[in-house]
Image 1 (cartoon, rainbow, N blue to C red):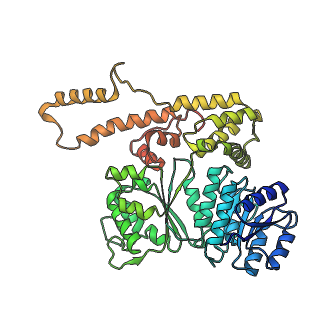
Image 2: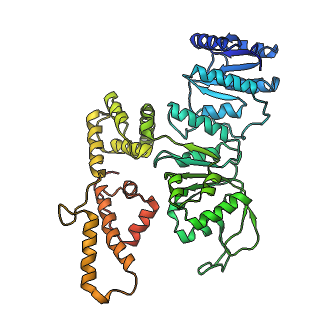
Image 3: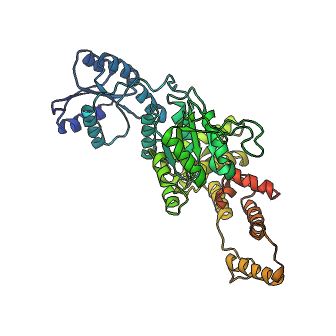
Length: 487
């Protein structure tokens, strides 16, 4: 790169042209700026300029449509795309059409200058388009939000879609980890093959290896036929390993071997099979803490954490709440619920909420508001009442079973001592542990469901269980579901 490099700018906003020109000139570049795509194209055709910065929406042409024409005429010329339409689709389209980088508006001038320098210094990559799928403008968005935190997610996803790199998605429950995995698949080069999702927390520990790698007929008691594992089902596509932090150590060892060697054998099988699936893993747990506790293999962590993506909690992007509210109320209308709007004061109250359940909690609240209230405009008083009621139901309490001064642990210990004293030398030969656990587990789940008015998703979050695991326990323990209200 030389300081004499010329940057061509196209943007119909004169103020943006001015601030970009001043910043780039101060950085040592020469600049030519135009307010339309036609002028920019004439400069490119004439062989002028070393790099292009173009807006998407211009009066005479969409800047995204200009990118492939520039790349075809001058393959080595780098193009940086700017847009106020700051969505995942914009980032994906910019990447697919050959842009070096996508910058959402409003942008940071220092970042623009740094991006220009990187573009001029980086060797040309002749990769073709990501896939044959080009998202339409009216295609439903997999993500909602234009906050800086989400913009970084969009740009990261756009860079990852043309690759096969392993991705580890972290974030609180309800932040949209599976949406990220599906977006990586749906707009990547493996989109024509299956997307297979498996939740580690929902599968009995003794069946996880069979579930992932399959088994042969007769390989164990009950294996009456050959079973295809998830790796085989996802051949050529994407395998999404959700709640990877709940995978038992023995299965972790086998998964590590697959990631290292690229092949596996079914349970009871002898012939190695090639593993041909992009791995995307996700967890809401702190894997480094699990490593320190000896519950997760460090070498597997590094194999999975090739590209980490941390999804922000909703409380970290409150400015996205109005757009999310509009989206979820629109979904409720399409499902047959009445039209609702949230007043400005109501939106302010939503921004101040802590959102322990993140986007999922907000979606549930919007459905509840649409279903339960007759007025079209929902104000702060209604939202305050709903949020306060949920907070009361969800608020943890210091459990006292017998005495005001006695905690749960002390009560259990005293009860067990009575049991041991009563039985003396006639204690059962085995099964005491399971018996005690069952005695505690059933009322715990029953009372939690009552506190959440039968909302199994919220009950699972309070208990720290996966929703499928909770459902399984409800069936096994024959716990009645009490419906005390919406949710």
